[in-house]
Image (cartoon, rainbow, N blue to C red):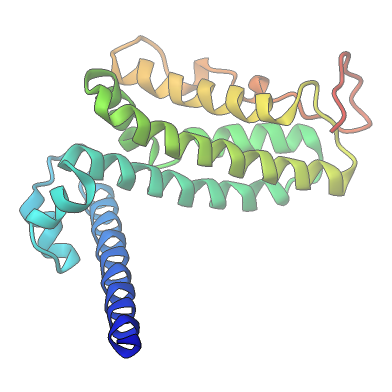
Length: 211
């Protein structure tokens, strides 16, 4: 009896592992296809073929193609965010950090896909929890990065770091949504660097919040 229970648990674990691997392949394949064909429609059949999966596994694991597209869009954004962190670490001072981060974020290839995911969540409320899950992950990742950076360099911020992260990304994503909605202007009209309040000791600033 004990042997049968052990075998059942082992089979269940293998099944879960296969499920996680399939989900990961589907998300990665979708992200790759969307990157290769920005703005183009990607079918469930194409996604499944690229991931080595069956089309019905899209709905089985994600509920809908739209939900999968949201997961894939934010996977691309999180990958881009890690690249942005490397750019930030190379900045010699806080002013350069703010300027380089803002320029790099607005040029991220994943932003259009994320803007589409946000727009989809507005029209399809069932996607809102998926979007929120990924946004919270993005905010926490950015907060940890900034916390490590300012602690290591003795920089400071004028507001709590969780507010800093949310404000910055809300500004960046809002700008992309406006552009996709047809708002007149270019990224050059946006002072995204101004959404960051991180300064070093050579820059006098009032209302400084120290972590």
